[in-house]
Image (cartoon, rainbow, N blue to C red; front, side):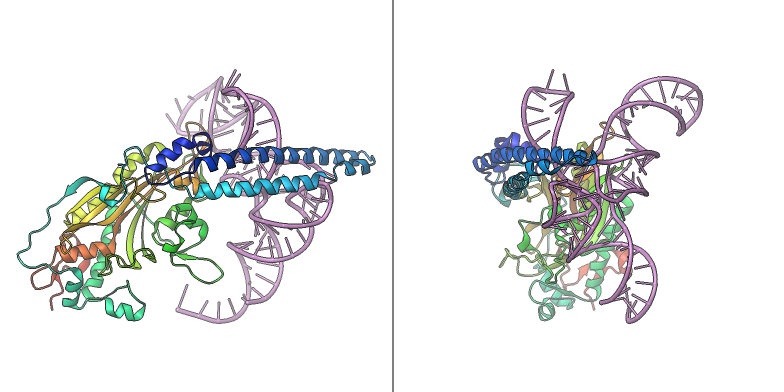
Length: 427
RNA sequence: GGAAGCAUGGCCGAGUGGUAAGGCAGCUGAUUGCUAAUCAGUACAGUGACUAAGUUGCUGCGUGAGUUCGAAUCUCACUGCUUCCGCCA
């Protein structure tokens, strides 16, 4: 959520900032509603004030043993007037709130102009794609060779966009989770956390998935109104919803969490239908930071580096791009995507998305801390990033480490987690 | 699933219809000193109006309705927590 005071004072400035992401803010409607709000609020509050003082007088009169009947008749019409004024104000405020809640975050200055992912700007590259002396298979074919990756049986169990893994491949999937968690805990100063996989609406509102993106979510249909998490970001970030950290609480708070993620992929029919790139259910290790406002820019660089470390240790070639205004997420002020090399596609594909939300999520969540310099409560800044998406990492390992016989070499750093074996998919 | 109780500020906690005590933590200043203590002052959160710092108003006692001139307090519904019983990995 944007600062309501800024939206009131400088709507043109906000409109200009949001135009970078292709969002059109109707300044005229906003201004009209806003001046209406002002009039109604002044009216309602002055009526409230009158009620209060009259009630007080009645109280005093009664205590003094006076006759209160004339006072009561004076106040008769006040009740109705007040109810009307409050209803009018509420109606306008609801309209304003709906507009405000639907406003995306303002992109940071350094976010490049652009309409789509084609306009994202590469920041750096790491590693060199391997030269193959044989025809490469994609991960679906490699999974068929060993019969350890099975989409058909998953379709029978559930439907499309799910996978079943067996044997050594299933073990490698688990090894990746352990490896990522351990690296962030032991080398990057993160605290591990375990959270629910079902969350309520307030949590989804806090991080920005609701109200605008409900169709991307799986929802339970009982009376509790719960949703399967699309990312650990939601439960982990909302830990500080409606909290005011007390003086002396140590910042930053850096949390790492492994969860499955569930996405309905409602708008992506026909995209990446083959293989594990885009699934309804996938594992992810997520990094979440809560920082002081002045530290958030550096924290994004650090967090991105933590995610990149995983790819470096796995020796997977990647590049890092900064998302342009047209491709950046609703809540984000600035996002780096890390893209891993996928040999079968001869392309870099997203494997991590690292974002600074500045105070956008914190304002929605009312996540605050007491600034020791001022003694006042201020909004925290939040960040998160995948460190990494496990399914896509597994796919990248399969393809980049494949052998001519269809087996897959195990990256060095994973071997301790795999009983020391060097290859999987060999009988 | 059954029964009872509870829900007040960053935290603790008083308050049974007349408009939120007190304490801790915080902030400011002072004193002693030494890595803290004592004293005094200030001070809750959200939000609005008007001028420059400031002044002033409204709202907030789990949530939502209701009764009333007036609700933390009374009524109803809901949510959460605690305890006991039952069931259960």
